[in-house]
Length: 263
Image (cartoon, rainbow, N blue to C red):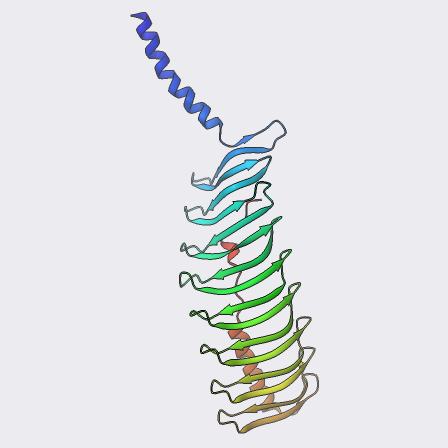
């Protein structure tokens, strides 16, 4: 009878010990204080903040990060040394926000940015070297027609700047030098007729500028000297057009802010 009671007690205790040992396999640091194995960090409300594997204090393999209300923010695949990451970040509604590669926690190579309103709508593509935009950058209409193309060198616009109408016809052509508009500036109506022509010097309107009506007839013509002109109406119209262009350009927020890389 006593043997049976002892056996029963051991059977009850063994699962508890196993559970305790299993729990000890999570969130381990070694003797040097480095994270090892599976780590699960939680918010104060008990929901998971992130989960993934560490090796010698570096994340390796698959990592997931969540918002406090359980929404997936980021899904990342780390290299064996933790230096390279293939990352996908998500909008709060679950749509993909951006995806690309990190090397040493800095953006590298092609990054894609997506709409938070239309699932799968690619808004823009940018190329990065050491976390700075380098190379051609594109923005797209919903049907994938290129809206804008501009090239960056170390995060500064450099070279030809192009914009198109949704039907693919050219809308704007100009140039940048060291992030400043420089040289000829042209805008067309959708029917292909010129709407505005002029020149920039170090981001200032300079030289002869003309604005045309949709039928091709001249509306205004004025001379600029580093941004100044005596033709006030021409200046108003040109400024309104440029304001419209800048608004159309928009500043696409970096959707990476919807999810963070594990640091």
